[in-house]
View 1 (cartoon, rainbow, N blue to C red):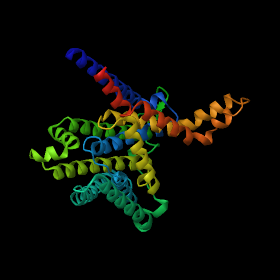
View 2 (cartoon, rainbow, N blue to C red):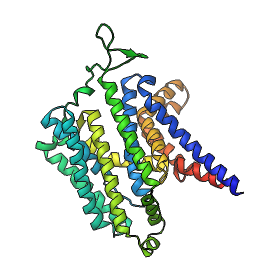
View 3 (cartoon, rainbow, N blue to C red):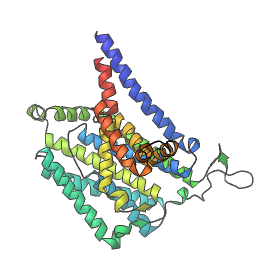
View 4 (tube, helix red, strand yellow):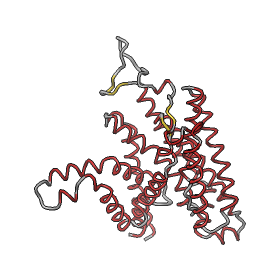
Length: 361
């Protein structure tokens, strides 16, 4: 029975990991598989949100910390790069300095919030982080001389990422095409996003199986017992809060370089926090693999569900009621229905439920 359980557990895990590997392969070759501009934007957003959701999963899934300030750290990284790129001009120096500044500010805020608040109960800590994020959002909107206010900041990315940059040329000096894809700066920008996000995700994945990651799981399961055997719970929680904040900040910097625009709606909006929460729940908390699945599913739904419903409405024309129910304007209604069904049939998220069923069956 032990062997059977072990085999099935491995099988369930392999299915999830195989799905994640397939997603990674699709993202790797996305510029060649999906050659329209919109698809490339979606692929880049998926890469960014995989890191953002995974870093949030370090808090809520592995440590049991509920925070609503994750977009605040994301915004610090994005605004750090955006402000310096605007003031210093395109180049790698402002990108690196912006990344360092964003991480530094994020860690300072994380330490302050962590040391002051992690001793209180979960709901009170969540409210404190929500208040902090709200204050930063208001400041970003009001400090228009620095942040651009509600209009945000538009700037230029490093020269390597300009669409006019020629990575490879043919004999005539024209941009070389490989499988119909132009080897230009836009392609370089996408692979900068993909490579950066891959490295950050692998770092988090390695952290979860480290001795510190094991302690965090023990704190999540039974905080009193972990403290009784000698672990400093507040110190560990503050550390993981800082790590999560730093990674979210770096994701913000990468997104700022890709988007070439940073504003409250793209970096600090509470809607982004809602998306992160939904992605974590859909994928599965405490699995890390769930971040990949949740980010992919919700992002694809946000970008393509409306189109699918438009096609369905047109196909059902002449049928009573159904064309109105499937009208593109009702895509949020159906997104909510899909989310409810996912939570009902996958109570621990898609990855979490699949791995648990493999262990128990």
